[in-house]
Length: 124
Image (cartoon, rainbow, N blue to C red; front, side, top):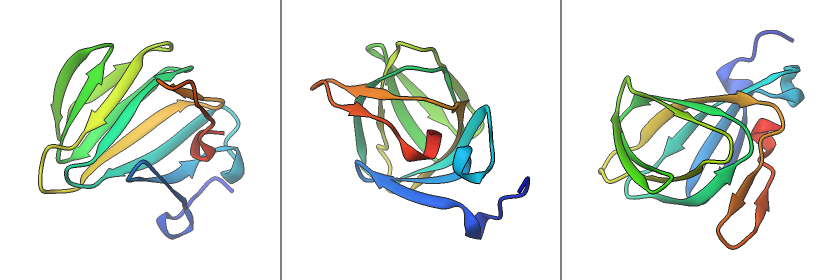
C-alpha cells in the first residue's frame, strides 16, 4: 500500500529512543527506508558506524551529533548527511524530546564500538 498512516507505522525502541517506521520493505518500499526518530530528553545513543548513507532532518528540538569525532549541534530545520562508514553518536542535551526524520536505503546496518552488529528492523 503506498499510504502509511501514522497510526499504522511500526514502532521500535532501542537505546532509549523510539523509531517510528513509515517506509520499509514491511510497508511496501523496495529501495528506501524512512522513519521518525524520537529522542527523549538527556538521552545518549551510543556511537555506531553505518553501512549506508543516512539523511537526518531535525523536525523539532536540538540534538548534538558526534560525526567521526566532530560534535555538531543541530536545531529544528537542520539536516545532517551521514556517509557510509561514518561513525555517529547522538545526544539530546535538552529537557524536551527531539524529533528527526531519517531516510536511508534499505539494508542499513550499524556496528557498535564493541563489535555488536545491529540490523534495525525499521530500515530492513
